[in-house]
Length: 464
Image 1 (spheres, rainbow, N blue to C red):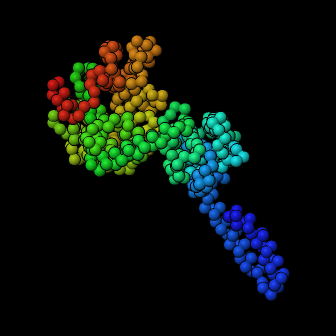
Image 2 (cartoon, rainbow, N blue to C red):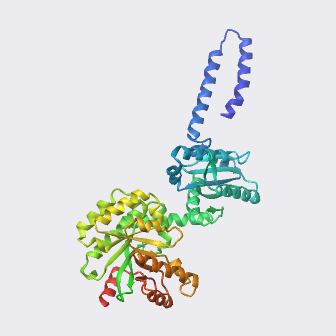
Image 3 (cartoon, rainbow, N blue to C red):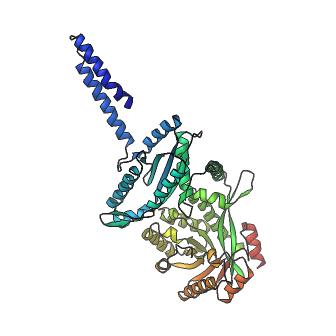
C-alpha cells in the first residue's frame, strides 16, 4: 500500500502531462476510479488488521508484521502480556470499566516506545513488538512492563490492579517462521503462569521445552484413544482404628511401551490443554467400580479430585447419578475433593452444585488447605466433611515451634467445628507420632503407604 501511494503522485503527474499533449484523451474518470479503489483497499485492510476494542492491531496484523520482519531478517523483541482472572474485574467493576481497562492497557503499550507496536492477540492477551537493541535495553523494557502491571490502573478515580503474566521472545535471525513465533508466544505465556515472579525471560531452551510438550501431548492423545489411563490409590491411615480406611484415587498414564509416565510431567500439560476433565472421568469411573467391589468393603471412602470446569459443568450431576445407578454404591463413600482456587472461579455456582450433590449423599473434602489460597469462610459456607492440610505445612513439623503451633492450632480449630482432619505428606515417624499424640484423625503420606494399583490396595485391605 505504501509503495502504491508513493507511485501514485508521479503517475498522476505523468498522466496530466500526457493529457496536456493529447487533450482529446480524457483520463479524469480513470484517475478518480483508481484513487477510490486504492482508498477502499486501504480502509478494508485497516478494518481487517485493527482490533475492534482497542487502539492495538489484532492477531492478523501481528502475523503480517512478523512475516515482514522475519522475511527481512530484522531483529526484534516481543513482550507478551496475559491478564489473569479478569472475570473478577468485570464482576466487581462492571464490563464497561473492564473494557476501559483493556483500552488503557493497549494505549500504554502503544506509547511505551516510539518504534514499538502493540497488538491484541486474544481477548486478554497483548503483544508489544519492539526493535532489539541488545540485552541491556531489552531487559530494561521487560522490567518496565513487569513493573507497570504490579501497579494499579486508575479509571474514573477507581484503582484496579489486574493480575498479569509476562513472557519475552527475542528474534535475532533464528529459523522460526511467523507461525512458529506465535506458537512460541502462546507456549511461553503458559509457562510463565507457573512461575512465582510471573515473568518468563527469553531462553533458547524454550525450544526443547516445546518439543517435550509436543511429545507429551501426543502421548496424552494416544493414551486417551487406547485407554492407557488408570487409577492408583494412596491408602489413608485412620489414627483412631489403626487401619487403612480410606484412599485417594490418583491418575496414572502409561506410554506406548507400557511404562508409567510421571504425573508431574503430563498432568500440567493435560490441565493446560483441556484434557484433565476427560481423563478424570476415567479415574472417577474406576473409583466407583472399586467402591462397588465387595473386596473393598473395608473402605469408608475413596476421594477423587474435581476441577473447576467439572464443577461448573451442567453434566456433572447427571454423570454422578449415572455412576450411582451403574455401580450401586453408598454415595457417602465417594469423597469429592476441591481446592479453594477451584471454588474461587465462580463461588455461587460452585456452592449450588455442591449443595445439590451433598443432598444426594456425596461428601466433599477441601484439599490443599494452607497453601496460601485457603479461606476459612469457604469452610464455613460449604458442607465439607473433612479438611486436608497441605504437605507444605508439616515440612518442619514437629521440630519447628512455628510449624507445630500452626498445625496443632488447626487441629484444635477444625475439631471444634466437627470437621475430620487429614494431614498429607507425612514421611517421618516423628511427624506421625506428634500428629497422633495431638489427636489427628487421619494421615496420608509415604510413611504409611505410597500410591499403588487396585490389586495391591485390595491385598493391603485384606491383610488388615
